[in-house]
Image 1 (spheres, rainbow, N blue to C red):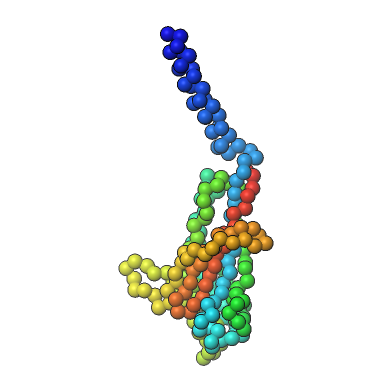
Image 2: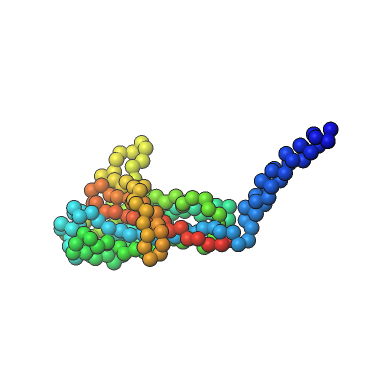
Length: 193
C-alpha cells in the first residue's frame, strides 16, 4: 500500500516540475520578444528597357504591398501604398532607382511567431515625358484571368543578409517585361515585453 502511494507521488513530481516553466512562458514581464521592420529598395535589371532608352530621365513609381502581421499582442492586416514621385534613372544599373526606405515598423513587442507575410501585388508608374514617355503597369497573375502583359512575380526569396540595421530576410517581386525589382527587407528586432 505504501509503495503505491509513494510511486504515485513520485510520478507527480516530474509533472509538477515540467509545468513550472510554463507559468512564466505566457507573457511574463521582461520576457524576450520581437518586433519587425520592413524596408524597401527598388532597382532595375541591367537589361531593363529604362536603361536603354531613358538614362537620366525622371519618373515615378507606386506599388501596393499586402501585409499580414499577427500575434497575440498585435494584429495588423492591410494594404500599404508607397509612392516615389521623384525618381531619376541612374547612369548605370548598379545603383537603385529608390534608395532603401522604411515601409512599415511594428510598435508593439510581441512573442516570437515567425515573419510577417508580405506580398507586392501591383507596380505602376512612368518614366520620361511627352512622346518619349513609357508607362509601367505590372500585376500578379490571378486564377481565371489572362496573364498580364507585364507580369509581377512576387515572393522570390533572396539570401539572408545584414547591414547597419541588423540581420534581414529579403524577398523580391520582379516584373517580367519592364525588368524592375522591388526588394522587401524584413528586420527582426529583439525587445522585451
